[in-house]
Length: 136
Image 1 (cartoon, helix red, strand yellow):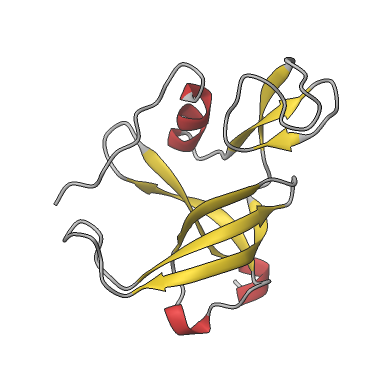
Image 2: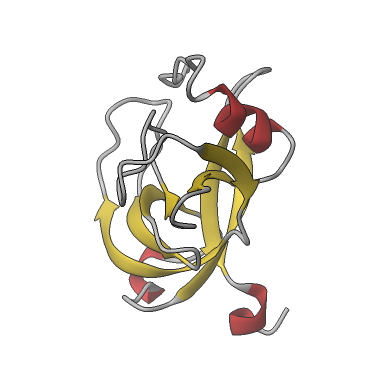
């Protein structure tokens, strides 16, 4: 059971390095101070080229989600949840939701990042219910 692994590029390597270290890193524009996701060579807000990598809070809210009830292979056992997460810093990213029953997820639920080890070199950012929301 092998999962499909992303292929880091020179542009995306800081993102993947952060994930291996337990940090969700986003590009931030030094010209307009806006964050962006996915990695690009220019700012998607102002067109500036002065981008740096910064660790995000890892917090967000569910903007939308779907429950996959039939996995595409044995490497992806169903059911699992795929969500769009609005990050505190502004960008929206697609990710998996973990540690939550599929029937209990709601749009607007607060979430926080955690990391799933997919290989010796790739840790995938996924989200779980925020601890302050669950009372942990």
